[in-house]
Length: 273
Image (cartoon, rainbow, N blue to C red):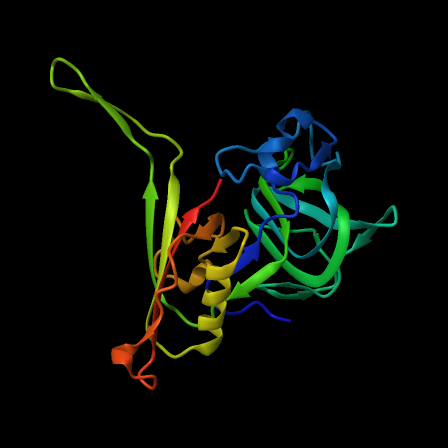
């Protein structure tokens, strides 16, 4: 197992807010819902912590679910671990893969990233636990914006043309002076994948699965590796992951009707509630 490919698609988080997970932590439990609200503007933060205090977060799913991926989006953890529950015992994930290579389990003692991604052997569990001892800034309160335990849906091997549109649902009102008041909302994202003269059969098969998927999936444009882009811009960073669903009907066709000249398809994905 290794981390490769381009754009990644992941099944909806086992602990997504729509699944009504049960959340618990050592401190600030009232902040826990922010971990599963899919927003990078809200977060869980500890209270009264330091580098000698082990804090924990637990997410209990609505039912036993299979997971083989874990994302910890926007955190300040330096020394931490993650485990899953099996028959009441906290157990390490095995055959863990990161961009840096293979690890025995998810245990970090000198983490310097603000977003962490792990692939591992699939497990079926109803609960995961994260324990945090030290932060990257000494004695800082621990924080985490999103926790996403999930399964991989698929990964593009090559690059279709990607177009993103971020809408802020701006509302404007004009004053008598002619000036305007413009308010921004959270808005949503639209992602178009345009396959032109495409020859990658596995990617085309994955695009068909996306079109026919009954549930929305997580779209991760950086595919765990933001270094593949010339510019590290919003939408393509490690922290940018969106729950989306294909809206348009399938429009696939061969180039000029000639089946040896490549395949064409556009899929339009919109952020889902």
